[in-house]
Image (cartoon, rainbow, N blue to C red; front, side, top):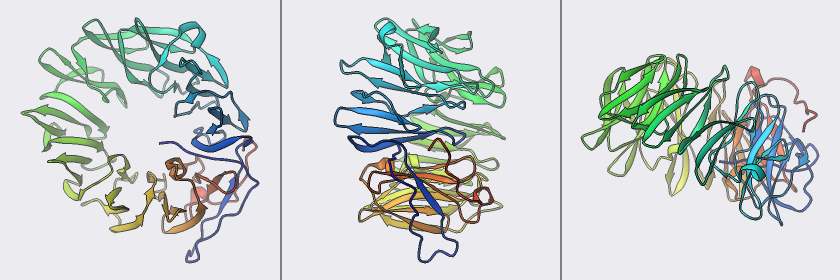
Length: 431
């Protein structure tokens, strides 16, 4: 989902009349509005020093990054991706329909390769840029505009490790392989979608070789009880993953079947304890935590979030109106009280801050509200675009979100009672 932002001088936000510790916030302009019609696609660098927004204009779409307007394109693909060193990259489409990679506001690759984009650009921790493109004869991966791997098919995403190693999965003829910085592990008949990634012990993935099902963990292959179909997660007690057998999907954790369903939609592994997962049976979704079913109904899959310590789960339910539910995990040492928030007309994806505060944005009757723990702050009338409901935690613990108050604003709020967010709000020069 995308984000939004716009221009104006710093504006004080209204405070909740019932708040014991009101949310303090300040709004900052992003860049010139010119003939822009709507802002969305807000993107922030990990260090909180750089911000970009995607804007729709009468001529097309353009990115405004750190206040500077980039060229206008027929289409710009979200997400806009920042590196840790403050560089920016995204895919766009020009007026004749050719994909263009834009790096730091400058076009790259398009005139040389004539590629079509595949997946988001991926920055390494040390600032190298990897992208995947497809053309008439297959697919290629480039790192800093130099080709490093070519195959008939490449499965997104590209995965960088914390120490700067790149992993990808792809196919040459009938042979599937996993490529890690030039090293190739070949001979697979398939690599399970959504399982390639990095854990503490190195690269991990699930694959098949003939009728054998394989998990690659800790630098070696392990036999899986059946074909791994994803999703997959890894925690202190080992991986949790899904296999398909006897026309059903089975969740495996600690080398045993935890539960069996028509489909397992998502898995979250807290630092301690059993997986939190969402499953579907006979068309109905069920949410499980601590080995217990805690909810059933129309649960929005992409909104299930687990507090960092694993003690609390939140999700959004669609019951004509939208409700955000908060539930303690059974058996958790530090749980939370069961609460329901709503009804709302629209709700953004909730987040848990590093300090354990739940934050989300909502709308009702066209008016926006930012929810930070127990506190609420009105954000005024906002556009219908879902991007205006995205919230982001900054490195210093403050919360960033978009607001549309006569040209649009980028707002930063302190989390009440969270020491990481205490202190004066400082306008950074990049804003």
